[in-house]
Length: 252
Image (cartoon, rainbow, N blue to C red):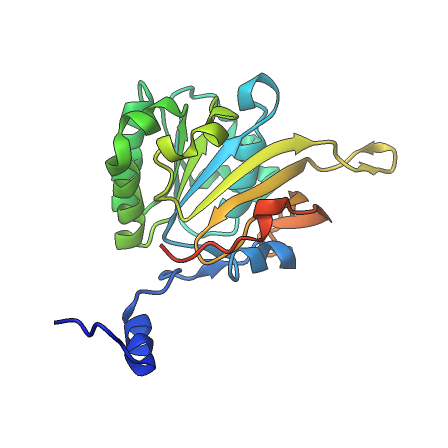
């Protein structure tokens, strides 16, 4: 029978028995405020959801660049799944991702993409799945949880790159089955900084909507560069958090 009135010592033992939030470690992204909001860096061996925003329903490539900056700091092959088959691998070099590491797959539709993504994660391969958004809702809670469990079991990091879904994702976040994701992001292009009279690196408005064990926040960032020893991202400016930005996301 569980103790109906647990003591402080009992509660401490229960907390110690819980698995750590980031069982497979963390990857610092560079900006201190961003890493602090994440609880020390991006959790590895976990599922992350990135929604693109911007012109044409989020097809400007901001999410692709953001994910590529992270992948460039990880080792091993990367399975990149895209039904549109429009990824330009050589363009990822500027973000620090060697195209020679890529394994490309072009399933017929989003349903097949989700299945391929789970297969890649269960093989222990870092996996990116470009998804339109509608199939996330169609799979129900089970779909997202299967991906998250595959990440956790195999220590593989997964990214759901959601297109054509903002602002519907914002309005129906609970229906898109993204609660299984360790972090949820919204990213949109922003004007770059001029350097010597020429356009500079891409600049992104990055918003952390949810992070287990972390806090919400938003920043202007740019790529860290091609050198894999450089940080994944550089801070351009911190942005004032909205009323929800100060809420702490409990472990779940």
